[in-house]
Each structure stands twice: as C-alpha cells, then as structure tokens.
Length: 379
Image (cartoon, rainbow, N blue to C red):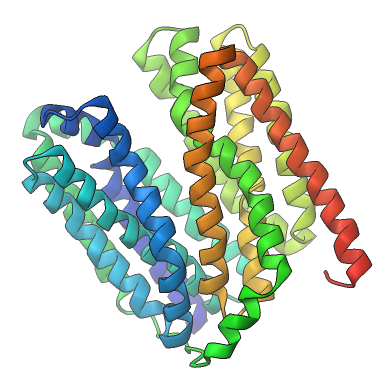
C-alpha cells in the first residue's frame, strides 16, 4: 500500500509536468520564428532536446542507481519547471536552443529515471510503467487546445509562465514520495553494461522508435495533403496521441499478464499493418481509423522493452533504461531525417509503406531473438 502511494505521487507529478509542457512545446516553433529563427534553427530547437537527453541519460542513470533515483527524478521536475521561464526571457533563437538542451537533461531525469523509480517501487511493474507513461502522454495531448486559447488572450510569454506554474506543481507532488534504496555498488553497473540482452533489446527498440520519429514529423503533413484543413489535422493528430496514451496503459497490463514478447510482437506486426493501411487510405475517415490503430500498435511495441529491462535489472533499472533511451533518442532523430529523405525521393505514401516494412522486420527479429534466447537458456 505504501509503495503504491509512491507510484501515485509520481504519476500525479508526471501528468502535471507534461500538462505544463502542453502550454509550451507545441508553440515553441512559432515563438522561435517570432524571435527571427530560420528553419534550420527551428529544426535544431527540437533536435537539441533529443541530443541532450541522449548524452545525459546514461551517466545520470548510473548515478541514480548508485545514490537513489527519487532525488534525481525530483531534480528533473524542478529543472523542467524553470525552462518555460527561460524561454520567456530569451531574446535570440540560440538562447532557446540552449535552454532546450536543459529541458532534455530534465527529461532524462524526470522521465527515464522517474520511470526507473516507479518500476522499482511497484509490485506490478508493467501496470505502473504503463500508467506513468500513459498519464505523461495524456497530459501533453490534452492541454495544447486550452493553451492556444490562452495565447489569444494573454500572449505567448504569459502562457509559458502558466505552463511553468503547472510544472512546478508536478515538482511539489513528487516531493512526498518515499526515497528508494540505492545500490551503492559500482560493480553492479558493470554487470548490466556487459549483458548482451540490454543491447539486444535496445537495438530491437530502434525499430518502433524510428517509426515514432517519422510520425512526429510527417503525420500532420500526410493529413494536410489528404484534406487541407488545420482543424482536420488537429483532430486526427489528437486521435493518434490519445489512442497511444490509452494504449500504453493497456500495454502495461498485457505485459504483466502475458509476458513481454506477445504484446511486443502484436505491436510490431500491428504497426506494420497500420502503416500499410495509411499508405492506401484515400479518404480522411479511413486514414483516421488507421492512425488510431497505429497509436495502439506503437504503444504495444514500446512498453514491453521498459518492463523487461526493469525485471532483468531491478537494482540497475535507471542505468539499463538509460542505455535503452540512448538508442531510442538516436532512432527518433533518425526516423524523422530518414523519413524526410525517403518522402523527398518517393513521396509520403511509399515512405509509409517502407516504415511498415521496418516494423515487420522488427517483428521477424523478435522471433529470431526468441530462438536465440531459448538456445542460450535465457528468458
């Protein structure tokens, strides 16, 4: 009961933190352009977060496992609440980019290490991780609409400050959580770093992460080319994010009850089918249904990796999830870049088919990995 209270407190913290981000992040490109940013600088604004996250997460994760994850995660919530204030005070696009790097470090702390804390304190790891990630995504998905209305009345800087206040409430919600027990053992970190399964799972996680990076960059473009209406684009993208957010919770339950491989295999192959359906859709209704199923499948192809590493390395969860995050961040950036090149060469619809093929390839590799682990006696 007491341990579940800690999960509840951190879940409240993450939904507040990500709800606050919904007041800020969707409007950063507009704000950057108002400060005179070029398209290259706008691109760097978003790449900076993933680069900083990937560079910071592994050393921070190793330290968190050794000294306690709660304090590191709480520091991330505190740092995150300061970034909108820094954005509002910025006078140049490269100042925004620098503060975006700080946000990447804060995300490494509150999301990756926060996930490790929740997994360590929960009895049912899949459900706890699923709830933590689901609330994070829902918080971010639901606040941009009211934020847009506030910007019309208050302006973008004051709306950023409201986002900072909401994030600050997330930091306060995390403070009463119980401190976890640190490992205080450097040799245990060496144990997971040398374990092949960490890298096998991380490489396999690249496949769904590539497709998420592609979707983040090009789903809006696809729907706008299908129906040139911002309202339709906003509605369909909301369907995608909400279906993904709710499915993350389902994925956690399925992973606890069925094991990690079955939901993952369903997610990989289901994503491949959904990408193919999107590529073939000729009207917005079919495309909207397909994107809803895509969000569901991508969630099933994401959560089992996190749960499995938390099960394999209970004392080094933050470190092992940090390795996974490095691979995922690189894949998110690569998915958008590769998608841009493919779309330029072949068009969007063939690119969707190619990304569907990537997910089928990931499913095939999972089957081969199962054969390998059975042969070597690992589970």
